[in-house]
Image 1: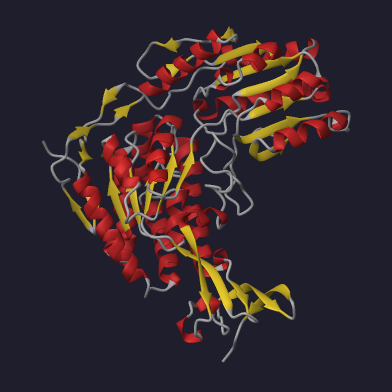
Image 2: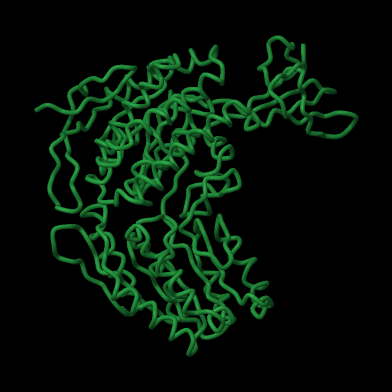
Amino acid sequence: MSYQPVMIDGVWQQAYEPVDYFVATNPYTRESLSDCFPVSTFADVDLALKAAQKAVMELRTISPDVIACFLEKYAEFIEERADELVESAHIETGLPEEPRLRSVELPRTTDQLRQAAHAARDRSWCHATIDTKMNIRSKYSSIGPVAIFGPNNFPFAFNSIAGGDFASAIAAGNPVIAKANTGHPRTTKILGEASFEAVKAVGLPDGMVQLLYRLKPKDGFKFVSHPMLGATGFTGSKKAGLQLKEAADKAGKPIYLEMSSINPVFMLPGALEERYREICVEFFNSCSLGAGQFCTNPGLVIMINGKTSEKFIDEVAALFRETPEEVLLGAEGTAGIDRAIHIMQQHGAELITGGKELQGNGYSYENTLLRVPGDMFIKNPHELQTEAFGTVSLMVIARDLDQMLSITNKLEGNLTGCIYSHTQGEDDKFYNRLEPLLRAKVGRLLNDKMPTGVAVTPAMNHGGPYPATGHPGFTSVGIPASMLRFAVLQCYDNVRQHRLPPELQNKNPTGKMWRFVAGKWTQADIIHKG
């Protein structure tokens, strides 16, 4: 059987004695697509790691400007192949061509690459620090080969060979070995072709960007714990993420995980009294966006028992019933939603609407709304925070404001948390009690705004406490902060000037750094002319 080639050390080649193969599925028709992709043995991983390690050595003499040029050139090549990419991603994921893929996600992807290029040139991400009195200097530097495992729900913006993790790792000066998501392998191959075209165009090492499609679990564990690997970036299920983390942790290898989040939304009484119909629409639009297949989907709503709360639930339920369901990414989507709903029902949640897989050509599931009393949520908090990756949300009805605080204390870590409050301050007294509790549970706190938009800005934090991520101190969106996942802090003590990295030399042409001058730290622009 003929398989699509993997990309190792600058060559598109057949996988070495693949142990199996797979094909992607069209979610609209449930039909298997024609291209066969290999399940690689560790022999392919070993070759890729050796090529990446060789690239690390070559990168020592390559200017950061070359890396920036690669990222910019790659963005151009993606735009040139936009039609092909959008068509492929639509067939493999069921996501709409317009506006989602062509007008939203593809521009976001190229924008990330260009932001990463700017950071690669700017060098401020290095946090160059100089103590002139002690002659001790430090900066962040590249960590070495990085493995990227991408998710299924963003075929461009989080793709293992084009998305935010990729851009951050490359901008920090690291070679990347991408492990494609098996939901969109052809799309990933097209991106791989464009990326390597950019590698050749600017003269980076052949091992700078490499691509594999699938590994057996044991080989994935061996990969993330390998001595030659610098770090791993992973976006996907909690189960797979924790298994990889266990393997990496045993070997002392950094791994950064984005795994699970239900993104609680608090509806304070004044907000509902003031504008519950408006909030209904905002909530449903957020919950149903992309068939609910967003890691920032609002899967939990907490409110106080009362007439207005019941009106809110009734109107949301009507929207859930009346709005046609969208196609999910694949068969595992419907099965996963079904499992999550049954777990919640077994632990006290009552079905309001939905709750069944839809029969037809495509993979889809009824828009589903559930409710549970606050007492029951406090009794079974873990099970009632099971993530259902679709248009599914659980309404938690607290008996009073004090119980709402008790519910907040039971929340697990999340990417986001929202509080809707009265615009004229009627909820402020209670907000001041709620906010410190919620702030500790989430990476990004929102007021009067749903969480599904993740802006690509340096100020963004797309991270959070466990189980949202494996480490609360890092973000996967927001350059340059996201680059620090793929960096090491290096210190130079009494090293001669000409032996120092450019960022740490006294005559530094690159700009901003912190310096210890006249007994205090100051940030200075050090620009030498002539």
